[in-house]
Image 1 (cartoon, rainbow, N blue to C red):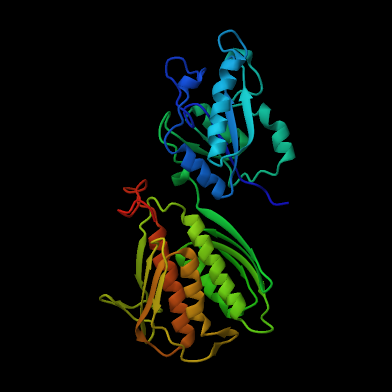
Image 2: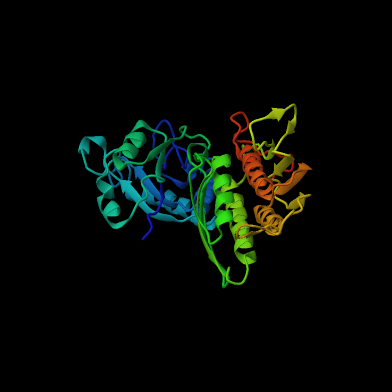
Length: 368
């Protein structure tokens, strides 16, 4: 069984407004979902997180905070979430006050003993999100990352989280499993049935600083077309999914890339080739290239599939992709290698998040 990543979320001050006089949401009238919460929780679910709410509610069930005064706004909150496709795997509520010295009040993890025993929690990818030092201490006790939020601020944990996505694509022709981490260090585990494709995908991971894990099997006893095409489709789907709403990214990328280490002026020397790659994560497809193979095969890879691979990738990523040789060169291995390297580096620029514009969409349209 694969481990599951969880988002352990504080409630008051993180998901909903917390009054700074009473610190209680004891009526529906006081209930206010904070900015960014609906979109943020939807995005977390899209990225494969299961949601768990963890909240301290001082004195619930006592005269100062009757149970019904807690439950009524809580039911309305969960109804709002459900109407927006948001489901919580579990909700943990500690009703005690600090003086009770219970085992279940954050930062203690007594409420979680059974949960941790029954679930395979991915500690590396899971996180606690909250607005108090006790939330941070709670995360440390669980052994997961802490994502701080400003009390009653906009909910946006994503600048603290790696952008990771997994894609599984099975057809009658191919079986592909892929995990892509945009914020990696260039680690790769590539295992397809085509050796030269393995090499190119390794270059993609290394030069993009993307962590890439991919296993691909296909009907190569007939031809390599289906496997190469479907790997391009799966990688394009992964790029689209992990880019999310594209807020904060550069969007545009451009690369002139040398195969050796000589770069003269604004031109690039790829041995005898000069190449430019431009990427735009525009939310719509366009693909242009002047690449023409100079031989039919490189080892076990049909060179006619270079165009088809990148066309399939761009279509599924919903991106503009231009691959242009300024000087075509002669060595087919180097020509294809330069394309994959330049594409990876251009895409890396497109997907980098700008600190100044991290909450802004790079478009006047309002949507990409």
